[in-house]
Image (cartoon, rainbow, N blue to C red; front, side, top):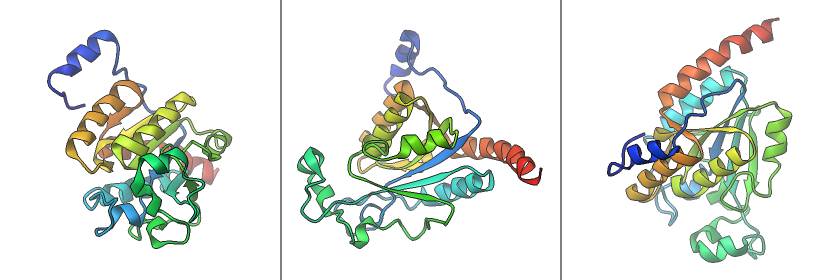
Length: 220
């Protein structure tokens, strides 16, 4: 990880930033790549144009390896009764209403028939959803987290992933935030405490290795 103001050495010295490494059974969690966030003109916009090709590559590699791909979006009832305190604190999320184009997944990242789509209400993809049970049932041990925002739903999902016994992997060039400072500081903190922050190239190389045994099992 990129050093921030010389603090990496300090974190290393006190025992943060240990490596979890990759496991054997991955899943890719595509966090909130919905139009209300990824398209210009909406108040929640995060510029992910340069990230999407790298996310596309990871999704293709995951599918080739037989790894589950799970998309999330946020969608609330029009009366916002299900938005809770999150909806009160983060006013912008109130625009993500069921049935609106804002909650649809970005057209550049089509959800395929083999993929899963979860509707969540809170930052973490695990909170109030069946994600934990699904990943456990599939034998997943590693969660590759891509999407947005680094400081919000990506961080919350990584935190819950490690809390639930999964190895969270965050490719730093596949996540983004609205403010560069928030992105960099949260990547630093995620890498120290909750996940291994790596590059998309490292993820692709690992998925290629996973794909070999997967293809062998399919043939057998």
